[in-house]
Length: 130
Length: 276
Image 1 (cartoon, chains in turn yellow, purple):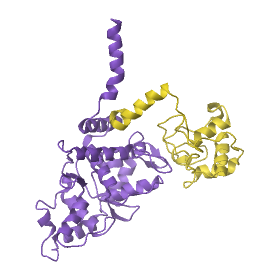
Image 2: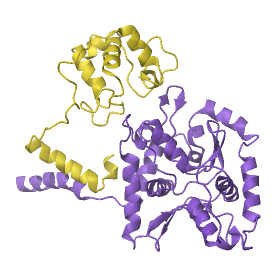
Image 3: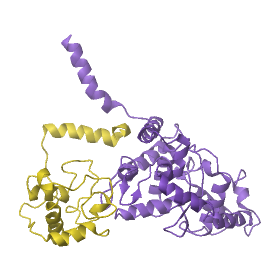
Image 4: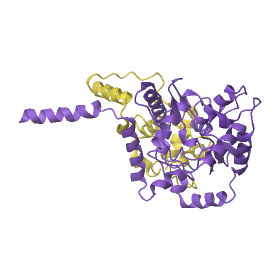
């Protein structure tokens, strides 16, 4: 995307450079995954949400065992517990993937309230089993 | 000697920041990206959208094209083009080189300081002749577009950004920002699907490359069950990412069309088209 360096990109990059010098971190209230969030959800209900086109629709981009016609945009969801040190770290990724990778395509399911708190806990619990 | 090295190191950091690309350079980068991404697709195939890269979808599309679903729209459009207004004049009086005028749009209108699309120009013609403007979403205006597109087949996309009017560059830049900006609850930009993920699968659908997106409008979309415009598709995409769509022919969509069509300069027009 650096090919399309217009003024916005220029200032963003400049801001990025300055940010290394001055740590200005004031996240929006509620934008980050709450530390005390309850992640004790129902994996079976999470599976249904993950497969439902109108809800999680995870299969549109990820291969998940048991789902037909998966998409090819995101990584295959397997061996999850070897890829995330804790359920909480996995939850962070689903809450807002742009924290770890600013160019991530995946929607911020928690931050943008795409899931209710219960749906969020259910989906995290399901993905954690994969 | 160390000072010379330091000079180059500093220049190396500064140069990428200081170089603002021109639209022509961005166009070359844009087109080059897709040619490298799809090296086996001939340049004149991108106009066929996803059918240039997906052989199974192409076979279905070719079967549909045997009895083109947009034919009636072309016939209705021709009728409208030839029917005089109440004052006795016709569209041909507004567009003396018509009806094959599709590759003249979108164009920068210096007088009004705005991007003029073909839809806008047709309604301007109606207003100048004392007729009511037509709705932009469906019906007679889309039929006229279908007829004009059919008559314009084979023309080459050649959008111009006049260098002596900075407002034209501003409109282009706004369109470009729209294209690359995330929007909606799902947080996607146009580019997220049709640039770096073009060719990838979204469930069973193949994401089409942005090169070729402006060549074939208006389009009979099976999902719509009728012929519709590029702006209607923009609005549908915005709603799919759960953003509020802008009005058809709004400044936002006209600027977006200006940017995207400029990126497609050199591509042959082959509208009207048929898509899923």
